[in-house]
Figure (cartoon, rainbow, N blue to C red):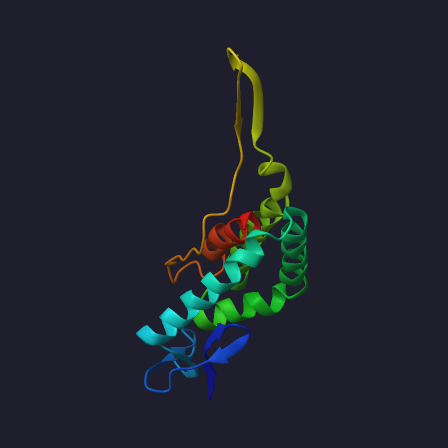
Length: 166
């Protein structure tokens, strides 16, 4: 049976001590197992993200947006397979899964425009010899806890914009 692990620093990791079956709701059969992360695995993932942050933060915003364009293309190219997996793992019927994925892809598309969104603003002479400006800077690593019933849409609401923003 296939075990779904954790992708950390480009490598799949599994905690052999704890796993859980993934059931196909339509058949009731266990089709996969998911490795449940230990505290150490979570800390390793956080450390890897923190180590990658300085370089990603300094990556030009246009290149970060290019990553989102490629991600969007991959989602579109693999939509049928993704929707099938949503159905097998979450019990969604095909048109619900397709609608959920499409809404997520729309959020990725919005993140593709991040270069325009991060321009900030500048106002001259807001007071005597005073100019005002704003700029947006990446702050660090993010995480999210997403619900089981929208396995594609909610993560695609959160992560693409966070990643594109740096």
